[in-house]
Image (cartoon, rainbow, N blue to C red; front, side, top):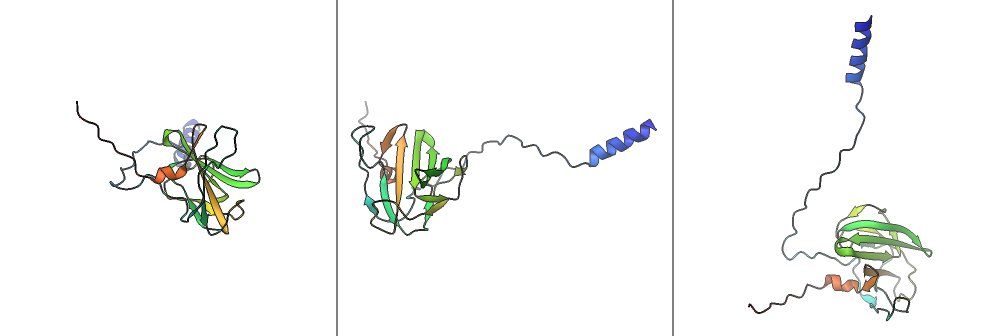
Length: 171
């Protein structure tokens, strides 16, 4: 009887579905983009309705981003590759925030998100749709696009400018 029980248990073990175990993902380097490919893209196409106006101090008034006009419901794109740090409501407005390499963080509001915190996003991929209701917007809807490095606010339009190359004399 013992060999029969052992045989049955072995057969059940061999034929039973395996438990799914996630293997650690191995990082595969993405191929370098072709020369001339921008590292950053505009999150929406549309004119700037209010430019970046950095505050003189950390608690002073200013405009810590740019406002871009677009139609309500327009797709909002990730400006660059990164990981969603936050997608939810802040002070009654829907906001998406993305962490990028080099300590940069971009913010987008008001955006009805289709992404969630922890999700990797690629440059130009949709992160949500533009909601109406951004205060002070002269159009039907405006996206407030912000950029920070640490606690320092930067002009997000600077991401779209080509880098300045300076040649130094030899010697």
